Image (tube, rainbow, N blue to C red; front, side, top):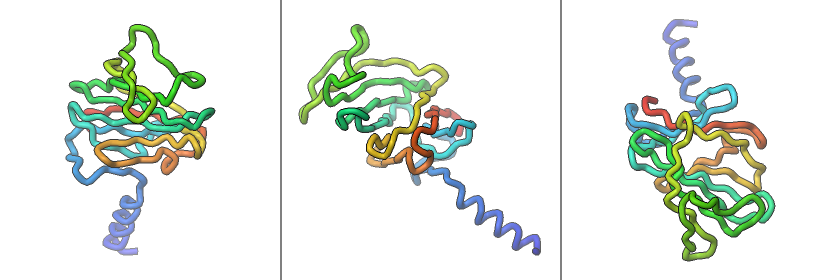
Length: 162
């Protein structure tokens, strides 16, 4: 194989890597990255200062909508609000942690949580297909199951210098 052909094969292989960068992301902008259990970056979404990205899913018992929304607050991944469809198993308000606000279409938001995530990260296990963990940002959706198997451990990390 010629050096030129080998170069083309390398470029083609690199293009197949499963890392998603939305088109408007600049290389120097902070990004929320999805890491597998080994630390490899599987996908990323731009997350400039003040931007919000929500992790949405369906409750594993009731099937109702749940969301945790994070903001890049001056370089710190911060949980700012959570949506809960009702007070189902494992859901509810924690005294002194934000305030409860009714949602116009049912359910409620806990707002003003403003809890900094240790090490700019959140670790979770990807839920089953009906749970459907999905990152949403500025009209974009990134289903975690497109990148990791059900039950796989993943880490969301705000990288300030991707």
